[in-house]
Length: 128
Image (cartoon, rainbow, N blue to C red; front, top):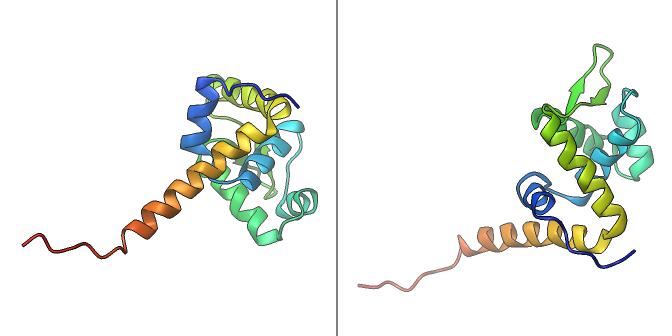
């Protein structure tokens, strides 16, 4: 593992489209075997998460245009555009070479959202 910079296009995708590390791991799992229809039990078992969380991740990927649901209820890796597929390929390569850099970006996004949420509850001094 080297500490390489995260390419700009991958950085943008991470900051705009990856809500969590489990989401990233699930996405890369589906990508690893694109012909396989993954169900929530299989994803949960491979990622060591609960089956409900796995189903939520799969449904979120479907809503984001990264996966499609089969008639049998499984989910296939199926990015909605070739460009999106290319970014995911670059993401997979970057993640394999710079796991810390990619996960730090995801965590910084989550941390920023948590701060914004907390700031909404701060008392502001009345200017009047």
